[in-house]
Image (cartoon, rainbow, N blue to C red; front, side, top):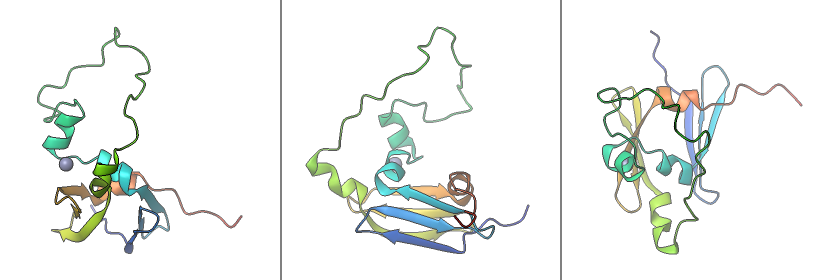
Length: 125
Ligand SMILES: [Zn+2]
């Protein structure tokens, strides 16, 4: 499997957006707020009410479950703003991006997971 590394990673702090440019020309653009919300660490998964160890206890989707669960999360409180600001980016080995947030929480996003979020190279419009 070829290594999956972006050509460039940029954080636009003013707009609160992280972007990664991939060798195939696709670009992942994700709001920092969303990035923090999808933090894959066990602490955040648990806070989201998810099974922190998917695969171990994964239950098949229940037919009794409501079809579309509306997200009840409101806007972040003012005091939470630092949760959505990046203080540092770093490489984690060669497979992931490490993010340290302004509230000192640390997240790790594999390049593969960021790659999956990309929009394909846009043809000239
Ligand atoms: Zn987390």
